[in-house]
Length: 304
Image (cartoon, rainbow, N blue to C red; front, top):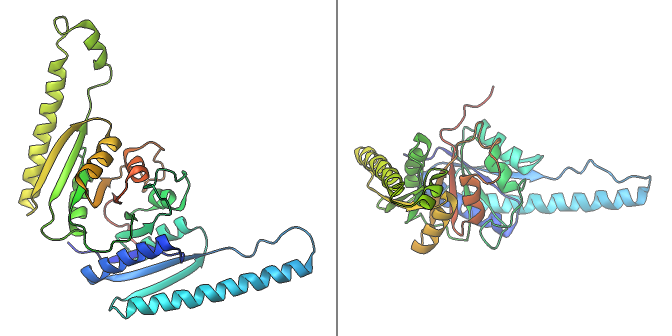
């Protein structure tokens, strides 16, 4: 399963250089088109007052910046095309997150690649940042790049809640990885709400351990079904069952085993626009120290 079109956000920063390097490597790997998106600042807003001298200076600064941006974008585009990648530059005025999502739909892309400026995963980025908003607006997968590596992923960790969306995350993580990559799947399980109170009654009066055993048995049955499903598709997966809050389990497992990619499914309607802060996908992106793939599913058809 190959990628069709890749959209990458580029703002001339170091983090977007990392994202562009990763996107270029994926475009080469999948022999596909790369759409480089540059969001231009809106220069039409002017300060209050009638200081013509100030307006003239601001106009000159803005013009010089646009010229410098154009030169650097052209150089970057030429360097990518020299590697044999078919590339298109889209430079428009508007918010970066909305442009990335819209252009992905226009080009029927199945992956958006973005970088992050954070030095500790994404634990400090605010809700409403370009990365968070892009994930929420997008209707296709979003790859949040952490670090400067561009080689194919070799050790992906895929989160599952045994839903169709999380099963799709396994397939989508596999296509970004080397063919023989070990696919590790983790499921975070927790006891039903209220079952903690049973421990206060004592094992003799309420055998709460039977609830735990039933939860684990149910998860194992679902895991065996998932393994068989992907074996039929030619993928060998290993499923780990870990007790704990999902985002914590996922990020800790990735750190402990040295995984280079986390893949997690998104369940929000219309991309993740309605997804609340604290969701598994968003918290995983925030706290991960490696690259994260947020899987939305198949690309939306282009609007006419």
